[in-house]
Image 1 (tube, rainbow, N blue to C red):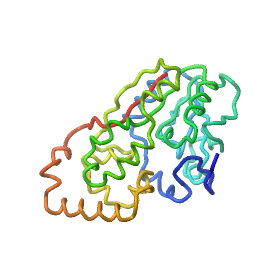
Image 2: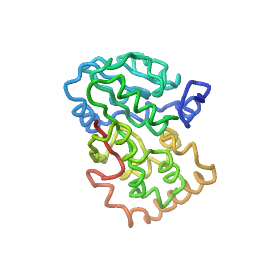
Image 3: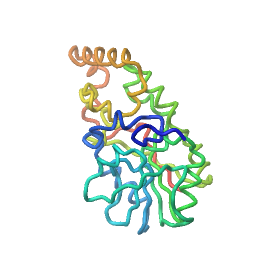
Image 4: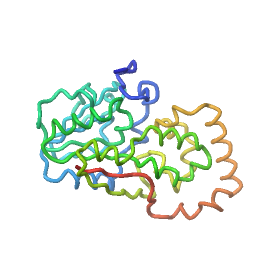
Length: 255
């Protein structure tokens, strides 16, 4: 398996784009509550692709796995250090954990089927995955400003039915509404705060932007800034500024 210089094992090089990730990608409490409820009464939880620790429950014993050194370094001190390993080769015995979780990470795995099989192997209870439905990504207005970024995400995210099949076929899928002031800065989190996506740091915390050409970024910045100044964006989507939640692509898969 190819790994980047900092150990990142997916297609995105977090050694290059991971600086400042934790500043923008802070766990959203309402999403965290959905994940915690899905983990049930588990007392030991494996978090695969743990990154900077978003959504790790604090009332259970968590073992975190994260291949990127830059992401491991951003974990806050109150969380356990993460183990340098990948989803496809988890260094644990069968049925070690009560439950396992993976948030915003399966699209980074080189071998999805093997990674999902590993999650099932080391877990005796529920497996909980937070991901995005690639078929629903174009609900977001970004598709009209940088369709290339949406197309990149749609290619990277596995289809929901693929995840369900990889988890044994008996998983349930729950839509997760995105709150207006979502503290986790994935792309759709800014559905009602378009100005935030003019912040290069906010975009860097969304790995899709690392795969689009600089010309696309320049066009996006120019056209969105122009539309915000002229009022065109608000004429079309201004109601989103006060819409409490957005039904976008976010999904919770629980097996």
